[in-house]
Image (cartoon, rainbow, N blue to C red):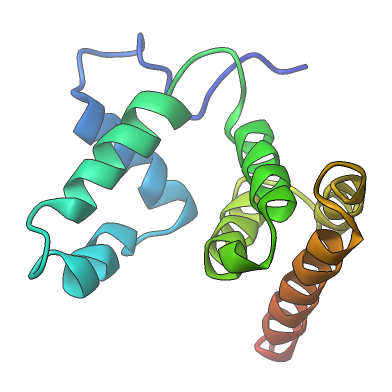
Length: 140
């Protein structure tokens, strides 16, 4: 297994926020701005906090590559069930951007039927199928 991350914390003296922004730029450019536009008026610095903590402190850790971390995230969100559909969709996109294939993602969603139940897996499959169809339709 590849033990590198997309941006290891030890690579430079970057802050967690800078590391988080570097990772987000690879998998979802504009995410911080989108989050800020939606949440920061009500909860100042929410977007920056999420980018710093989730991406700069967790996703940037050594030990797992970005693709593996995204697959683990898809698995967890699937097992948690239908209420996580919007986050699952975003993280499916992130996993694809990190190099996961559609087949790998569908397989991990199916695997979660053992842990989250078949309804959770069906909900996950529906989110993935909708996303994949939209991506295919937008291709030239």
